[in-house]
Length: 178
Length: 318
Image (tube, rainbow over all chains, first blue to last red):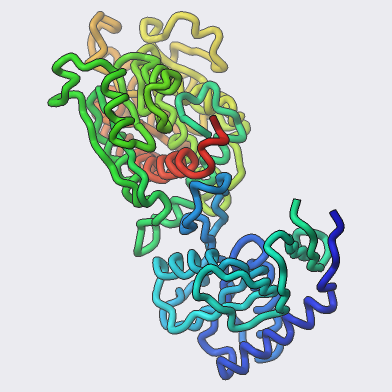
Protein backbone atom coordinates (compact mmCIF):
# COMPACT_ATOMS: atom_id res chain seq x y z
CA UNK A 1 0.00 0.00 0.00
CA UNK A 2 1.44 3.35 -0.99
CA UNK A 3 0.36 6.47 0.84
CA UNK A 4 0.60 9.89 -0.78
CA UNK A 5 1.33 12.95 1.34
CA UNK A 6 -1.32 15.63 0.78
CA UNK A 7 -0.48 18.08 3.56
CA UNK A 8 2.92 18.68 5.06
CA UNK A 9 3.88 20.41 8.23
CA UNK A 10 3.92 23.90 6.69
CA UNK A 11 0.54 23.30 5.01
CA UNK A 12 -1.03 22.21 8.29
CA UNK A 13 0.24 25.20 10.22
CA UNK A 14 -0.86 27.56 7.40
CA UNK A 15 -4.34 25.98 7.41
CA UNK A 16 -4.65 26.32 11.19
CA UNK A 17 -3.48 29.95 11.06
CA UNK A 18 -6.11 30.71 8.43
CA UNK A 19 -8.82 28.91 10.43
CA UNK A 20 -7.87 30.93 13.52
CA UNK A 21 -8.25 34.18 11.55
CA UNK A 22 -11.58 33.01 10.12
CA UNK A 23 -12.85 32.18 13.59
CA UNK A 24 -11.92 35.64 14.86
CA UNK A 25 -13.49 37.25 11.82
CA UNK A 26 -16.81 35.41 12.05
CA UNK A 27 -17.01 35.76 15.83
CA UNK A 28 -15.89 39.43 15.76
CA UNK A 29 -13.08 38.77 18.22
CA UNK A 30 -12.34 36.08 20.74
CA UNK A 31 -15.09 36.95 23.23
CA UNK A 32 -17.15 34.07 24.66
CA UNK A 33 -15.33 31.48 22.56
CA UNK A 34 -14.64 27.94 23.78
CA UNK A 35 -12.66 25.38 21.81
CA UNK A 36 -13.49 21.72 22.34
CA UNK A 37 -11.38 19.03 20.65
CA UNK A 38 -12.76 15.61 19.83
CA UNK A 39 -10.34 12.87 20.95
CA UNK A 40 -7.87 11.80 19.91
CA UNK A 41 -6.34 14.23 17.42
CA UNK A 42 -9.00 16.92 17.62
CA UNK A 43 -7.78 17.68 21.16
CA UNK A 44 -4.33 18.67 19.86
CA UNK A 45 -5.81 20.69 17.01
CA UNK A 46 -8.00 22.54 19.52
CA UNK A 47 -4.98 23.32 21.68
CA UNK A 48 -3.04 24.66 18.66
CA UNK A 49 -5.99 26.77 17.54
CA UNK A 50 -6.40 28.17 21.06
CA UNK A 51 -2.74 29.20 21.10
CA UNK A 52 -3.11 30.90 17.70
CA UNK A 53 -6.32 32.67 18.74
CA UNK A 54 -4.61 33.98 21.82
CA UNK A 55 -1.64 35.17 19.75
CA UNK A 56 -3.83 37.03 17.25
CA UNK A 57 -6.43 38.47 19.62
CA UNK A 58 -4.44 38.87 22.82
CA UNK A 59 -7.31 37.21 24.66
CA UNK A 60 -7.11 33.83 26.34
CA UNK A 61 -9.48 31.26 24.83
CA UNK A 62 -10.57 28.34 27.05
CA UNK A 63 -9.92 24.92 25.56
CA UNK A 64 -11.17 21.48 26.52
CA UNK A 65 -11.99 18.07 25.12
CA UNK A 66 -15.28 16.36 24.38
CA UNK A 67 -15.42 12.56 24.23
CA UNK A 68 -18.22 11.19 22.10
CA UNK A 69 -17.74 7.45 22.60
CA UNK A 70 -20.82 7.06 24.77
CA UNK A 71 -22.96 8.89 22.21
CA UNK A 72 -22.09 6.90 19.10
CA UNK A 73 -24.89 5.17 17.22
CA UNK A 74 -22.73 2.28 16.01
CA UNK A 75 -21.53 0.78 19.31
CA UNK A 76 -22.80 -2.65 18.36
CA UNK A 77 -21.00 -2.61 15.01
CA UNK A 78 -17.47 -1.57 15.89
CA UNK A 79 -14.97 -3.06 18.33
CA UNK A 80 -15.30 -1.72 21.85
CA UNK A 81 -13.67 1.69 22.22
CA UNK A 82 -12.47 2.96 25.54
CA UNK A 83 -13.94 6.35 26.37
CA UNK A 84 -11.46 9.21 26.62
CA UNK A 85 -11.72 11.89 29.29
CA UNK A 86 -14.00 14.85 28.67
CA UNK A 87 -12.82 18.14 30.13
CA UNK A 88 -14.97 21.21 30.01
CA UNK A 89 -13.26 24.51 30.97
CA UNK A 90 -14.45 26.07 34.23
CA UNK A 91 -17.34 28.37 33.54
CA UNK A 92 -19.12 25.83 31.38
CA UNK A 93 -20.47 26.25 27.88
CA UNK A 94 -23.80 27.95 28.59
CA UNK A 95 -24.23 31.01 26.41
CA UNK A 96 -20.79 30.59 24.81
CA UNK A 97 -19.83 29.97 21.21
CA UNK A 98 -18.38 26.47 21.07
CA UNK A 99 -15.95 25.62 18.28
CA UNK A 100 -15.66 21.85 17.84
CA UNK A 101 -12.31 20.77 16.44
CA UNK A 102 -11.75 17.44 14.69
CA UNK A 103 -9.15 16.08 12.31
CA UNK A 104 -11.24 14.54 9.52
CA UNK A 105 -14.87 15.20 8.68
CA UNK A 106 -16.37 12.18 6.90
CA UNK A 107 -19.87 10.77 7.46
CA UNK A 108 -20.80 13.45 10.00
CA UNK A 109 -21.80 10.85 12.58
CA UNK A 110 -19.05 11.82 15.01
CA UNK A 111 -20.29 15.41 14.93
CA UNK A 112 -23.88 14.27 15.44
CA UNK A 113 -22.71 12.40 18.53
CA UNK A 114 -20.75 15.46 19.66
CA UNK A 115 -23.86 17.63 19.38
CA UNK A 116 -25.76 15.14 21.56
CA UNK A 117 -22.93 15.14 24.08
CA UNK A 118 -22.91 18.95 24.18
CA UNK A 119 -26.65 18.95 24.84
CA UNK A 120 -26.06 16.96 28.05
CA UNK A 121 -23.44 19.42 29.27
CA UNK A 122 -25.16 22.72 28.65
CA UNK A 123 -26.71 25.06 26.14
CA UNK A 124 -24.17 26.97 24.05
CA UNK A 125 -25.23 30.09 22.17
CA UNK A 126 -23.86 28.62 18.96
CA UNK A 127 -21.83 25.60 17.90
CA UNK A 128 -19.35 25.81 15.01
CA UNK A 129 -17.23 23.10 13.47
CA UNK A 130 -13.58 23.36 12.49
CA UNK A 131 -11.93 20.43 10.73
CA UNK A 132 -8.47 19.98 9.29
CA UNK A 133 -9.67 17.80 6.40
CA UNK A 134 -13.11 17.51 4.83
CA UNK A 135 -13.18 14.34 2.74
CA UNK A 136 -16.86 14.38 1.77
CA UNK A 137 -19.30 11.42 1.82
CA UNK A 138 -21.60 13.00 4.39
CA UNK A 139 -24.42 10.76 5.65
CA UNK A 140 -26.10 13.49 7.70
CA UNK A 141 -27.02 17.13 7.05
CA UNK A 142 -23.87 18.48 8.72
CA UNK A 143 -21.34 20.90 7.24
CA UNK A 144 -18.13 22.42 8.57
CA UNK A 145 -17.74 26.15 9.23
CA UNK A 146 -13.96 26.19 8.99
CA UNK A 147 -12.02 23.76 6.78
CA UNK A 148 -8.26 23.30 6.51
CA UNK A 149 -8.43 21.42 3.21
CA UNK A 150 -11.18 19.96 1.08
CA UNK A 151 -9.97 16.55 -0.01
CA UNK A 152 -12.36 14.79 -2.38
CA UNK A 153 -11.72 11.09 -1.83
CA UNK A 154 -13.06 7.71 -2.70
CA UNK A 155 -14.69 5.68 0.07
CA UNK A 156 -12.09 2.98 -0.46
CA UNK A 157 -9.31 5.41 0.39
CA UNK A 158 -8.02 6.02 3.84
CA UNK A 159 -7.03 9.44 5.13
CA UNK A 160 -4.47 9.49 7.89
CA UNK A 161 -3.78 12.58 9.95
CA UNK A 162 -0.54 12.51 11.92
CA UNK A 163 0.30 15.19 14.47
CA UNK A 164 3.64 15.85 16.06
CA UNK A 165 2.20 15.61 19.60
CA UNK A 166 1.43 11.89 19.31
CA UNK A 167 2.76 10.65 15.96
CA UNK A 168 6.10 12.46 15.98
CA UNK A 169 5.47 14.47 12.81
CA UNK A 170 2.85 16.63 11.15
CA UNK A 171 1.39 15.28 7.92
CA UNK A 172 -1.77 14.13 6.20
CA UNK A 173 -1.57 11.14 3.89
CA UNK A 174 -4.04 9.43 1.61
CA UNK A 175 -3.80 5.80 0.59
CA UNK A 176 -5.84 2.75 -0.30
CA UNK A 177 -7.40 1.22 2.77
CA UNK A 178 -6.24 -2.23 3.76
CA UNK B 1 -15.17 -9.05 27.27
CA UNK B 2 -18.09 -11.38 26.84
CA UNK B 3 -19.05 -12.11 30.48
CA UNK B 4 -17.94 -10.91 33.89
CA UNK B 5 -18.02 -14.03 36.06
CA UNK B 6 -15.12 -13.79 38.49
CA UNK B 7 -11.99 -11.82 39.29
CA UNK B 8 -9.81 -14.91 39.52
CA UNK B 9 -9.59 -15.24 35.74
CA UNK B 10 -9.86 -11.49 35.06
CA UNK B 11 -6.60 -10.26 33.58
CA UNK B 12 -4.85 -7.26 35.04
CA UNK B 13 -5.31 -5.38 31.75
CA UNK B 14 -9.06 -6.08 31.68
CA UNK B 15 -9.41 -5.06 35.33
CA UNK B 16 -7.60 -1.78 34.69
CA UNK B 17 -9.70 -1.11 31.62
CA UNK B 18 -12.91 -1.55 33.65
CA UNK B 19 -11.56 0.77 36.36
CA UNK B 20 -10.51 3.40 33.79
CA UNK B 21 -13.83 3.33 31.98
CA UNK B 22 -15.47 3.63 35.42
CA UNK B 23 -13.53 6.88 35.94
CA UNK B 24 -15.12 8.28 32.79
CA UNK B 25 -18.52 7.06 33.96
CA UNK B 26 -17.97 8.73 37.34
CA UNK B 27 -17.21 12.01 35.54
CA UNK B 28 -20.51 11.85 33.70
CA UNK B 29 -22.32 11.34 37.01
CA UNK B 30 -21.28 14.84 38.11
CA UNK B 31 -23.17 16.43 35.23
CA UNK B 32 -26.61 17.91 35.35
CA UNK B 33 -27.88 15.34 32.83
CA UNK B 34 -26.59 12.02 34.17
CA UNK B 35 -28.14 9.81 31.55
CA UNK B 36 -26.10 8.64 28.57
CA UNK B 37 -27.72 7.24 25.41
CA UNK B 38 -25.11 4.49 25.03
CA UNK B 39 -27.17 1.33 25.60
CA UNK B 40 -30.41 2.58 24.10
CA UNK B 41 -32.52 -0.36 22.97
CA UNK B 42 -30.62 -2.95 25.02
CA UNK B 43 -32.41 -4.98 27.68
CA UNK B 44 -30.74 -5.82 30.98
CA UNK B 45 -32.38 -8.39 33.25
CA UNK B 46 -31.64 -8.37 36.96
CA UNK B 47 -32.08 -12.01 37.91
CA UNK B 48 -31.95 -12.18 41.69
CA UNK B 49 -32.43 -15.54 43.40
CA UNK B 50 -31.12 -14.09 46.69
CA UNK B 51 -32.11 -10.95 48.52
CA UNK B 52 -30.19 -7.81 47.82
CA UNK B 53 -30.77 -4.11 48.16
CA UNK B 54 -27.69 -2.23 47.13
CA UNK B 55 -26.37 -4.53 44.43
CA UNK B 56 -29.71 -4.73 42.65
CA UNK B 57 -30.42 -1.01 42.96
CA UNK B 58 -26.88 -0.23 41.88
CA UNK B 59 -27.12 -2.40 38.76
CA UNK B 60 -30.54 -0.95 38.02
CA UNK B 61 -29.27 2.62 38.36
CA UNK B 62 -26.22 1.80 36.22
CA UNK B 63 -28.29 0.26 33.42
CA UNK B 64 -30.80 3.11 33.49
CA UNK B 65 -28.09 5.79 33.41
CA UNK B 66 -26.90 4.13 30.18
CA UNK B 67 -30.47 4.19 28.79
CA UNK B 68 -30.90 0.40 28.80
CA UNK B 69 -34.29 -1.08 29.61
CA UNK B 70 -34.25 -2.91 32.92
CA UNK B 71 -36.35 -5.90 33.90
CA UNK B 72 -36.17 -6.88 37.56
CA UNK B 73 -36.74 -10.46 38.49
CA UNK B 74 -36.63 -11.81 42.01
CA UNK B 75 -37.15 -15.46 42.78
CA UNK B 76 -39.73 -14.68 45.40
CA UNK B 77 -43.11 -14.35 43.75
CA UNK B 78 -41.87 -15.78 40.43
CA UNK B 79 -42.28 -19.17 38.79
CA UNK B 80 -39.07 -20.26 40.51
CA UNK B 81 -41.15 -20.74 43.64
CA UNK B 82 -43.31 -23.06 41.52
CA UNK B 83 -40.21 -25.15 40.82
CA UNK B 84 -38.99 -23.71 37.50
CA UNK B 85 -35.40 -24.68 36.74
CA UNK B 86 -32.57 -22.26 35.95
CA UNK B 87 -32.57 -23.60 32.41
CA UNK B 88 -36.22 -22.79 31.80
CA UNK B 89 -35.86 -19.37 33.39
CA UNK B 90 -32.82 -18.63 31.21
CA UNK B 91 -34.55 -19.75 28.03
CA UNK B 92 -37.53 -17.59 28.90
CA UNK B 93 -35.22 -14.59 29.28
CA UNK B 94 -33.57 -15.43 25.97
CA UNK B 95 -36.96 -15.51 24.28
CA UNK B 96 -37.80 -12.11 25.77
CA UNK B 97 -34.61 -10.80 24.17
CA UNK B 98 -32.32 -10.02 27.09
CA UNK B 99 -28.93 -8.61 26.04
CA UNK B 100 -27.37 -8.93 29.49
CA UNK B 101 -28.31 -10.92 32.56
CA UNK B 102 -27.16 -9.81 35.99
CA UNK B 103 -27.45 -12.88 38.18
CA UNK B 104 -27.26 -13.40 41.91
CA UNK B 105 -27.71 -16.97 43.03
CA UNK B 106 -27.27 -18.93 46.24
CA UNK B 107 -25.35 -21.68 44.46
CA UNK B 108 -21.67 -21.11 43.73
CA UNK B 109 -21.05 -21.39 40.01
CA UNK B 110 -24.61 -20.64 38.82
CA UNK B 111 -23.42 -17.71 36.62
CA UNK B 112 -20.74 -19.97 35.06
CA UNK B 113 -23.38 -22.56 34.32
CA UNK B 114 -25.53 -19.93 32.65
CA UNK B 115 -22.62 -18.55 30.62
CA UNK B 116 -21.42 -21.96 29.44
CA UNK B 117 -24.81 -23.54 28.89
CA UNK B 118 -25.84 -22.15 25.53
CA UNK B 119 -29.33 -21.62 26.96
CA UNK B 120 -29.01 -17.90 26.48
CA UNK B 121 -26.81 -15.75 24.28
CA UNK B 122 -26.72 -12.70 26.57
CA UNK B 123 -23.70 -11.34 28.43
CA UNK B 124 -23.69 -12.69 31.99
CA UNK B 125 -22.65 -10.55 34.98
CA UNK B 126 -22.10 -12.30 38.27
CA UNK B 127 -23.69 -10.26 41.07
CA UNK B 128 -22.73 -12.76 43.76
CA UNK B 129 -22.94 -16.55 43.65
CA UNK B 130 -23.04 -18.53 46.89
CA UNK B 131 -19.70 -18.32 48.66
CA UNK B 132 -17.78 -18.08 45.39
CA UNK B 133 -17.35 -14.57 43.96
CA UNK B 134 -18.82 -11.07 43.72
CA UNK B 135 -16.62 -9.45 41.07
CA UNK B 136 -18.29 -6.03 40.75
CA UNK B 137 -18.00 -5.54 44.53
CA UNK B 138 -14.26 -6.18 44.36
CA UNK B 139 -13.93 -3.84 41.38
CA UNK B 140 -15.79 -1.06 43.16
CA UNK B 141 -13.63 -1.59 46.24
CA UNK B 142 -10.48 -1.35 44.12
CA UNK B 143 -11.90 1.73 42.39
CA UNK B 144 -12.62 3.40 45.74
CA UNK B 145 -9.12 2.57 47.05
CA UNK B 146 -7.48 3.84 43.88
CA UNK B 147 -9.36 7.15 44.10
CA UNK B 148 -8.53 7.65 47.79
CA UNK B 149 -4.87 6.76 47.33
CA UNK B 150 -4.03 8.49 44.03
CA UNK B 151 -6.74 11.18 44.01
CA UNK B 152 -9.83 11.23 41.80
CA UNK B 153 -8.21 13.05 38.89
CA UNK B 154 -4.96 11.10 38.89
CA UNK B 155 -5.96 7.47 39.21
CA UNK B 156 -6.46 6.55 35.54
CA UNK B 157 -4.15 3.72 34.53
CA UNK B 158 -2.75 3.34 38.06
CA UNK B 159 -2.66 0.05 39.93
CA UNK B 160 -2.50 -0.69 43.65
CA UNK B 161 1.16 -1.67 43.77
CA UNK B 162 2.41 -1.98 47.34
CA UNK B 163 -0.89 -1.01 48.98
CA UNK B 164 -1.45 -3.04 52.14
CA UNK B 165 -5.06 -4.19 52.49
CA UNK B 166 -6.40 -5.99 55.57
CA UNK B 167 -9.67 -7.90 55.21
CA UNK B 168 -11.26 -8.76 58.54
CA UNK B 169 -14.12 -11.06 59.42
CA UNK B 170 -16.10 -13.90 57.95
CA UNK B 171 -13.71 -15.01 55.20
CA UNK B 172 -15.28 -18.49 55.13
CA UNK B 173 -18.65 -17.36 53.79
CA UNK B 174 -17.53 -14.19 52.04
CA UNK B 175 -17.59 -14.00 48.24
CA UNK B 176 -16.56 -10.36 48.63
CA UNK B 177 -13.33 -11.46 50.32
CA UNK B 178 -12.60 -14.04 47.62
CA UNK B 179 -13.15 -11.63 44.76
CA UNK B 180 -11.08 -8.98 46.51
CA UNK B 181 -8.18 -11.32 47.19
CA UNK B 182 -7.87 -12.27 43.51
CA UNK B 183 -8.40 -8.79 42.13
CA UNK B 184 -6.25 -6.91 44.64
CA UNK B 185 -3.37 -9.33 44.26
CA UNK B 186 -3.44 -9.04 40.47
CA UNK B 187 -3.42 -5.24 40.88
CA UNK B 188 -0.28 -5.54 43.02
CA UNK B 189 -1.70 -5.02 46.51
CA UNK B 190 -0.55 -7.00 49.51
CA UNK B 191 -3.52 -8.65 51.21
CA UNK B 192 -3.76 -9.87 54.82
CA UNK B 193 -6.81 -11.81 55.97
CA UNK B 194 -7.74 -11.63 59.65
CA UNK B 195 -10.39 -13.90 61.15
CA UNK B 196 -11.07 -16.38 63.89
CA UNK B 197 -9.73 -19.80 62.77
CA UNK B 198 -13.29 -21.13 62.48
CA UNK B 199 -14.13 -18.52 59.84
CA UNK B 200 -11.21 -19.31 57.54
CA UNK B 201 -11.85 -21.75 54.67
CA UNK B 202 -9.92 -24.94 54.07
CA UNK B 203 -7.19 -24.49 51.46
CA UNK B 204 -6.53 -20.85 52.24
CA UNK B 205 -2.77 -21.55 52.00
CA UNK B 206 -3.16 -21.45 48.22
CA UNK B 207 -4.57 -17.91 48.20
CA UNK B 208 -2.29 -14.98 47.34
CA UNK B 209 -2.72 -13.53 50.83
CA UNK B 210 -1.24 -13.87 54.28
CA UNK B 211 -3.38 -14.94 57.23
CA UNK B 212 -3.50 -13.79 60.83
CA UNK B 213 -5.77 -14.40 63.83
CA UNK B 214 -4.75 -11.24 65.66
CA UNK B 215 -6.35 -7.98 64.51
CA UNK B 216 -4.35 -5.76 66.89
CA UNK B 217 -1.01 -7.10 65.63
CA UNK B 218 -2.01 -6.46 62.01
CA UNK B 219 -3.32 -2.96 62.74
CA UNK B 220 0.05 -2.15 64.33
CA UNK B 221 1.61 -2.55 60.85
CA UNK B 222 -0.27 0.59 59.69
CA UNK B 223 -2.23 -0.93 56.80
CA UNK B 224 -3.49 1.46 54.07
CA UNK B 225 -6.92 -0.14 53.94
CA UNK B 226 -8.96 -1.97 56.61
CA UNK B 227 -11.93 -3.75 55.08
CA UNK B 228 -14.47 -5.09 57.55
CA UNK B 229 -16.78 -7.89 56.36
CA UNK B 230 -20.33 -8.44 57.46
CA UNK B 231 -21.03 -11.30 59.86
CA UNK B 232 -23.47 -13.23 57.72
CA UNK B 233 -26.11 -14.33 60.21
CA UNK B 234 -28.12 -16.06 57.48
CA UNK B 235 -25.23 -18.43 56.68
CA UNK B 236 -24.18 -19.05 60.32
CA UNK B 237 -25.72 -22.42 61.03
CA UNK B 238 -22.96 -23.53 63.39
CA UNK B 239 -21.31 -21.92 66.37
CA UNK B 240 -18.35 -20.25 64.68
CA UNK B 241 -17.62 -18.06 67.70
CA UNK B 242 -18.94 -18.14 71.28
CA UNK B 243 -21.06 -15.01 71.08
CA UNK B 244 -21.21 -11.71 69.28
CA UNK B 245 -19.68 -9.72 72.15
CA UNK B 246 -16.60 -11.86 72.12
CA UNK B 247 -16.33 -11.53 68.33
CA UNK B 248 -16.75 -7.79 68.56
CA UNK B 249 -14.07 -7.50 71.24
CA UNK B 250 -11.44 -9.47 69.34
CA UNK B 251 -12.22 -8.88 65.65
CA UNK B 252 -14.52 -5.84 65.56
CA UNK B 253 -13.34 -2.37 64.53
CA UNK B 254 -14.33 -0.36 67.60
CA UNK B 255 -13.64 3.29 68.40
CA UNK B 256 -10.46 2.43 70.27
CA UNK B 257 -9.00 0.47 67.33
CA UNK B 258 -10.12 3.23 64.95
CA UNK B 259 -8.16 5.78 67.01
CA UNK B 260 -5.01 3.70 66.51
CA UNK B 261 -5.14 4.03 62.69
CA UNK B 262 -2.67 6.56 61.38
CA UNK B 263 -1.98 8.56 58.23
CA UNK B 264 -4.49 8.21 55.42
CA UNK B 265 -5.68 4.70 56.28
CA UNK B 266 -9.23 4.09 55.15
CA UNK B 267 -12.01 1.90 56.55
CA UNK B 268 -14.20 0.01 54.11
CA UNK B 269 -17.32 -2.11 54.47
CA UNK B 270 -19.31 -3.68 51.65
CA UNK B 271 -22.57 -3.23 53.57
CA UNK B 272 -25.05 -3.88 54.95
CA UNK B 273 -23.31 -3.13 58.25
CA UNK B 274 -24.02 -4.73 61.61
CA UNK B 275 -23.23 -1.62 63.64
CA UNK B 276 -21.79 -2.57 67.01
CA UNK B 277 -20.81 -6.05 65.85
CA UNK B 278 -18.03 -5.97 63.23
CA UNK B 279 -17.86 -2.17 63.05
CA UNK B 280 -18.73 0.54 65.56
CA UNK B 281 -20.87 3.51 64.61
CA UNK B 282 -17.88 5.74 65.31
CA UNK B 283 -15.81 3.87 62.72
CA UNK B 284 -18.61 3.63 60.17
CA UNK B 285 -19.27 7.37 60.26
CA UNK B 286 -15.67 8.57 60.60
CA UNK B 287 -13.88 10.52 57.85
CA UNK B 288 -11.79 7.38 57.22
CA UNK B 289 -14.90 5.45 56.28
CA UNK B 290 -15.59 5.03 52.55
CA UNK B 291 -18.90 3.19 52.95
CA UNK B 292 -20.96 5.72 50.97
CA UNK B 293 -18.19 6.33 48.41
CA UNK B 294 -18.26 2.59 47.79
CA UNK B 295 -21.96 2.82 46.96
CA UNK B 296 -21.48 5.62 44.43
CA UNK B 297 -18.37 3.91 43.00
CA UNK B 298 -20.59 0.86 42.54
CA UNK B 299 -22.80 2.64 40.04
CA UNK B 300 -19.79 3.86 38.01
CA UNK B 301 -18.10 0.46 38.01
CA UNK B 302 -21.29 -1.34 36.99
CA UNK B 303 -21.90 1.19 34.22
CA UNK B 304 -18.38 0.42 32.97
CA UNK B 305 -18.97 -3.34 33.14
CA UNK B 306 -22.30 -3.10 31.30
CA UNK B 307 -20.77 -0.82 28.67
CA UNK B 308 -17.81 -3.12 28.05
CA UNK B 309 -20.03 -6.20 27.87
CA UNK B 310 -22.73 -4.76 25.66
CA UNK B 311 -20.78 -2.65 23.19
CA UNK B 312 -18.51 -3.98 20.51
CA UNK B 313 -19.03 -6.72 17.99
CA UNK B 314 -20.52 -9.60 19.91
CA UNK B 315 -20.05 -12.06 17.03
CA UNK B 316 -16.28 -11.55 17.16
CA UNK B 317 -16.05 -12.45 20.78
CA UNK B 318 -17.71 -15.79 20.57
